[in-house]
Image (tube, rainbow, N blue to C red; front, side, top):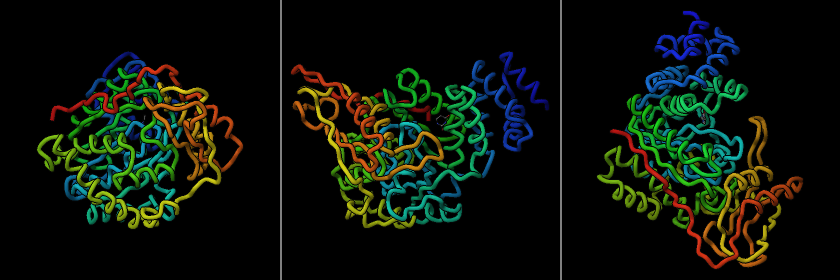
Length: 439
Ligand code: URA
């Protein structure tokens, strides 16, 4: 097979066969197809697109490009969730122990923060001692015995995605729907889950801010996952404002702990139950979605999910005492209030600007190599629809290094829009739309 012919075929709008896609991907991973030819093909794909069948084959071939888990490896009914990334999105921290408490098997592979959105591993690593670099055997053993483990994506899983993503990043080919779908779903397929729920964020802080783009992505993810034999659901959820009230790492863990104790923000608890309900129904653990939501609410309320979270932290080397004493989590040296310039109702709270504000304080990274500060972040005292007085506190910056505080303050201040009239303003609906598969 000749890679030049494959590039030419796609350049001219042809449809690639499984053999051609497999030849391209294996050559990419082995290095026998050089970067310039991979890049040329990516650009051809960007302009010409891919059929559903091609996208499904690409996803499957990428998933098989390294080591994988199959559902049988993990024992029981295996489930997974994926978020397209948000600000203050600590859903995984609450949802995975909740699902394990409901009797499902959750072997979660997660990533680190990049850009304005946070990463689950960074958040969990703010718990002293917590380790996400589990060996394959340890990961499998934990999932089989306890129903729950969370690990960093290892370098031997889906190597094709790492190589392609790096090239897409420097060739302006990231925002191609089939390439995004294959990238996301290949990692999910390799993770071995039977049922997958995708939280597709929409609004200012989302990877794809426009609803029609979020919808297109959600539909494509569900369709490709189903073609590859997974039960799939996607929920499009609001990311115009951040989720919950805390954006950072340790401060988000604190909010997740509060939620597992039944005292967290309502939007976070609702989102976890709504996402989890799709999986409980797929697994046959609940007859209907409302019954599943009620069951998950019960497991949050009676401490079962909190007990699973404790077990997860202990099993992975973390100091589980943080659940009883959150003051053991890293805390910033200083707090600095962001005040309202006028009285009124919060009309807008731009998630992207808050995320960038938290990053300016050191909570995130712009390059993979950057170190993060686990203690810093932004606490949102007011959110959309709430009233504030003149000079009332809108948000609190948790600060260690003063260098970029002025920038962070400016970003957080400009995230807020206050309506001085008495007119009420409803918060945006959290659950925007559900995209259910055929199954
Ligand atoms: N997330 C991924 O994992 N891959 C993409 O291509 C885009 C978002």
